[in-house]
Length: 314
Ligand code: ZN
Image (cartoon, rainbow, N blue to C red; front, top):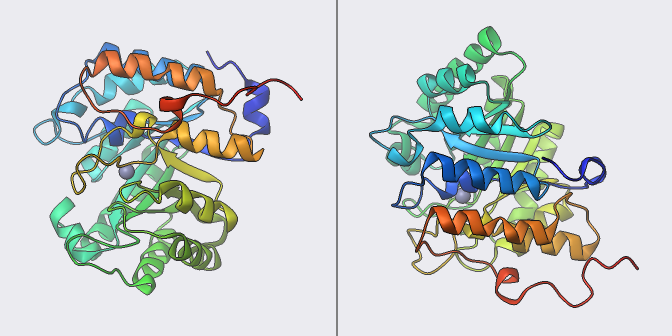
């Protein structure tokens, strides 16, 4: 059930919820399939229109994602939403495309050190993998969208600074290979607003309308400021996670992903429509909490609630 087709049509920004993938693969516990489905239902009911629901990786690496195809099948029963999955290689892409996802997202590290640690491939080998996956899309599921997320685009905990020229070069290479969109991810929570503004402007100058989402982390408290900086230079798609789920292995006690509740509140308070209903979004924490008892959830808005008079028509 999507309660607000009109709100969705009028939305000025797209909030892409990544909790069921990015969040759930970062926690130790495995959420039961039925609980994942209930949580996704609640996210859809809140008006979220794009949800990254799973990661197609071998279960021996990420047992939390072993039910990816089942979760995708359930998510696809909701009309009007974009069902996304992350795939790190051609085998994963094959499985995701067979499951019928609307969009796949491919992680390409901007940092060579992170690429080797994360996918055990150099960046050039990963670009070859991207080309293989794009060929697979063309041959088997041409209607499926393909987005590349350039991780560690703003800095890397393994190698430190990441050259902006390298980020832009990789983005251009992915577009040349046929990617529909290339977004930038602050995987390590190292970005600042000035850097976000500069790099997204360069990205837009290089690949135009194929410049994709801002995937910001709140590790050092700059998540919302970085989203706003990206918005100011034309970014209109933002990745975030309900309850900031996933935490951050590099900063105990800190949220990893930007908290969806706080992000939606910021935009709605500014008069920038998200299509998301905040009371229903806050209610979507319940199935998450029930499915992952004891897991830390974050967010400032959920702590204090909506301001007096919120939602009352002026
Ligand atoms: Zn993330």
